[in-house]
Each structure stands twice: as C-alpha cells, then as structure tokens.
Image (cartoon, rainbow, N blue to C red; front, side):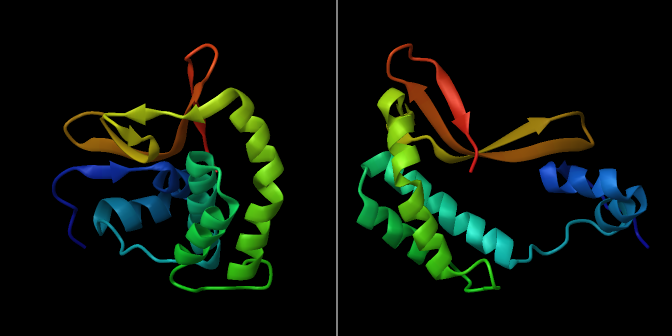
Amino acid sequence: MQAHSGQIRLSHSTMEIFHVCERKFQLERLLVGENEKQDYPATVFGKALGAGISSYLLHQDEDKAILETYLNYYPVLEEKQRSEESAMNMIRCMIPKLDMILQDYEVAFFNNKPAVELSFRVDIDEKFYYVGYVDIVLRNKWTGKFAIMEN
C-alpha cells in the first residue's frame, strides 16, 4: 500500500470512523486516501428533509418546502421508514415547530445570500485540515445574535 501524499481531510464522519476503529481510519484515510462518496437511504432522506426545512424557513411557504423536499430526494434510495412520501409528510408535521422558531429568528444573510448549507475548512497544520457544513444560520430578530440550526 502506498501512503497518501498531500493533506489529509478530516470531517465529522472521518472522526467517527477514527473513534470506532483506528485501524479502519488508517486503512481508509491514511493509506488509501479518500473513498468515493456513497449515498445511503439515511443520507438521501436527511438531505431532502434539510432542503425542505431550509426552504420553509426562507419562504414560509409549505407547498414550496414540500416541493423542495421532493426535488432533493435524489437518488431515490428508500427503505421502510425513509421514503419520499415520509419526508414530505415530516415537513408538513414540522411546520408548527418551524413557525415557533420564526417568531424569534430569521435566516441570516451574508453577502446578500441566505446562510444555508455553508461549508467551512479549518487548516489544522500542514498535513491535516478539517471540513464541515452548517445547515442554517439563524439571526435572532430582537438581539441580532446568531444561532446554528443543524437538521
């Protein structure tokens, strides 16, 4: 096996691998390099649900949020509890809770763009860097303070 040259990318998921099995982390991240990203029913479901939540918080339009959920359910990988239909129904059920959040918060905007699905990178040293994603940044209407909403 050849050692991976260049920087090593760390993330929440790679750190989970490390904490579960250091050897697996070594084999998958240090010796071989990045694996091709694979979609699973849970990740497809979560991505679609996140798109619907973000849409509702931005537009307060239930139909648009359900449509965004449907359009982002790709590739269609379903299992018993995770399906396009259950994701769209879940958005419908979440509307009252999202409306409660919207009483005090609104989606933040940075550089005239909604703070939704933001990525970040932190250079740890010359060998390692950490990447992550923030689902939504909210701004309190009364205090102006920011909050992170993870779906």
